[in-house]
Image (cartoon, rainbow, N blue to C red; front, top):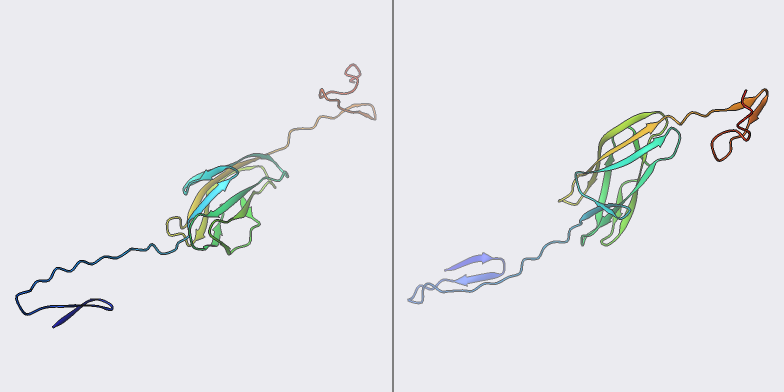
Length: 173
């Protein structure tokens, strides 16, 4: 009688005194191709679950960060969806495909239309089984601009100089 253990491999069982047979089998396990997401801002690598602080910006000033999404794997990385916390937006179009060894920018901006503090979780959905979703805590603060002091002599506004006071500091009033 025959026993099939693997496709295309058949072992024979003997009914005589040569039973049992010792058969040495060998094989190679091959890891299937897979993407591997790496995220950086400038020269800093960000870990999944890490954070990115936008710092402090003044109302109306542009405040954005370019997050580089890299693929260190050996198959295409598909970034399919972005979930941003309140107070942040992105100008990057999704979905995007990143080839092995390549990077693509993800631009995230802090909304600077009003004074507030923002803090929340960014999630990047992708097909890297080790980093899906990839999450970062984003934070940033928007403040009022500093007050502007205007000094005048009657109807004449005295211009400021590099020291922060009028051209003639003796003529106030």
